Length: 408
Image 1 (tube, rainbow, N blue to C red):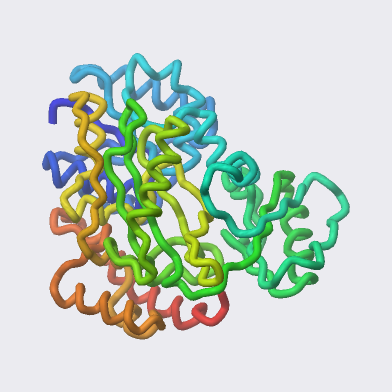
Image 2: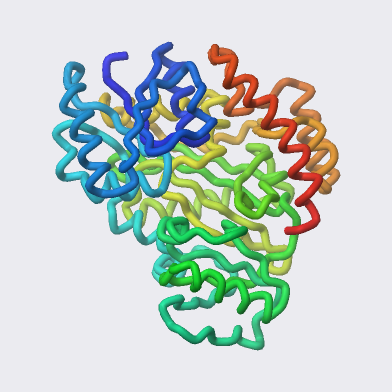
């Protein structure tokens, strides 16, 4: 390849972005990471460079300067952050890194407005986006106030600042908590406060419906702030274990049992272009049967862990970036609407744990036709350890869904 590409992170997002590089160029990209994660640790398609202090601003800058200065033979490297914390660290240190790297990410102000959920819901309340009813809890206040009596249970409680929340571990710490009673909610809030987290907690009324009410919408906006690409996918399953709930495991692109895809995508496109968004982003949505609206749960300022399906449909995510930042090529907007299944779980999990019958049959039909992908299962992967890990992962998924399906 004509330009060096470096990935930041070591999770599933980093793996499939490395896969995009390998599929397009046949080369093994460098991956800078703070920790060893099985998604990438044993892989043959990445060259992992570990910096234990990468998650700190000082450590991040030192690592990236060291790497950038030693990789100028092809000009500036394309840097692709694969986790929220690395998006933010890159933007914080952008001025010091521009001599060595090019990238396409949102501005720091926009990224922060997405990453801090309190700012997000308040700032974009009048933007045309639809949200569930939301209140906020300040964890820096010693006394936990009771939940307003007119809030309808169950409630979803999640951190306003996910990056900071993950720094304060406690036993059974969930990504998102579902409270079924007022006491249940207050007890969880107290536990979060005891962990040392002093940020805001977002408390929202739960939108009824199973996993098939969830939707995934990915956008790419070029460096000039124009949307070039979008997808709209109905989710069939998410992770059910407490520490991973909210992570998609099965989705079908181009499928929507409720209709209105074109209108929703047009609304999101206008929103992103209006705020001057640049780079990849992902809308996490849930369809609300009560009013027929797609409620925005969050917007991630990066490609998501499940976004590889775009590459499987012919839209290589790394290609999209290189054409933009190096070739300055502009493309007319395209909505990728071909039906295609992404599944990170075995077929038996789809059969047993997707309870939306029409959706389940559609997923199995696409599976039979071979119109499917798993971001981690790559024919170009040569590592036996990685392949063995995937076997164990599949077995573990069967166990996890059996244990946790009725607990969310």
